[in-house]
Length: 102
Image (cartoon, rainbow, N blue to C red):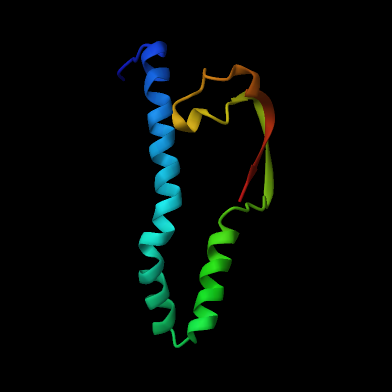
């Protein structure tokens, strides 16, 4: 595994987050026509297809946990670690023994 200097990692963090935010905003517009066409091929009316598209996009922001798993060990959870920023804001790290899963 390649080790990257923490200062260098933080130097790239902001541009990567900006690019990721732009993609999150632009992808629905890029694929909206494709999705709309796919829903109308299911013989939905255009208004129903639009309502389904909006429901799919809004529903993507919610996660409903189904089951909690209890671990025998402590798990350090850093919400920014998924973006490679585990040490960027250490106050956000949490120690957990339970993990919700879907």
